[in-house]
Image (tube, rainbow, N blue to C red; front, side, top):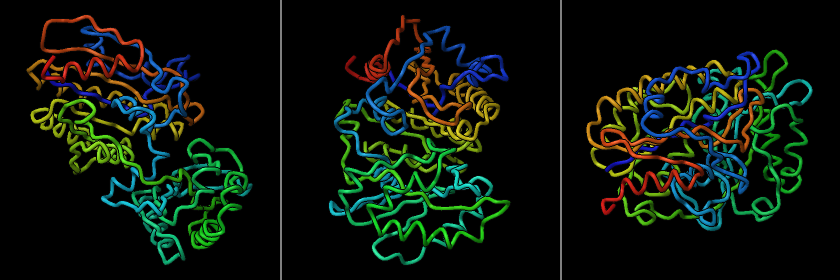
Length: 379
């Protein structure tokens, strides 16, 4: 029996006052998820519990059965792997967001809000020059990486808040410790800010925000963990990096993005093809998380509805052999606060195309047991 894990990033949410306390998941249309619930169960589970900060890297690794002791420090290294790059043991890599700041030096967006994709590409090009001791690497949209010599002061003793968790705070306070500990990064932050001045408009200016320092760390292979052949359908850099680190097949899919504009039909077709060849498939959708960070609860609800109709519907209609499916969030991304939290997320689990079986999901370990036992040829 094969298994499919569908992660809707940031699926959990807080009650939306305008919807009389409903969440985007509650508000969405999801008849196919409801069908799965009728065949199995729907629970509310905290993936991170109280063990770590609620963010995609750790939560998705946990859902895939990686032990916490094997988690890399921050996401930047895996995002580098997603782009077929690596670093030596003497280097480190930082994530670097294009952010926007108002006249009071308040961080108002973590994702270059107000700039078009073309603007963001031009902003990256403006910053992509020779910086002594730093390699600048543009990934996509507002996402960049910085590669530089390893500095334990930054890796071990520098508290840098992720920008997506820091909206509304003073940008100078947020970056002060980093700039104090690294003159190299201080020069980079201030130098690129000058190069980005031409993009300023309506009292809003743009900066580069380094965060999440990471060093080289190998993940265990998925096959070694579970004895299974697996694959992933994903576009977000962090998830592609996880797939690369776990040695999961992860083909590039034309039209797939890490936002609500992704080509769901293309991801559906890729999932169906990979299910023919693999015992386990992970399909990841990132748009709900991005919408919630923008406080766009209607956009998040619409995206959940689209996944239900355009992805789950065709999968349930097309796959004829027994299949175990879990639809889960990784963490809460609140459309009210724009931030992550460690509260419980919806988890739907069912076995289809076979005799109905009892399913109970109480914690994250139950998700793994349900999926991996199903996928194991021996069980």
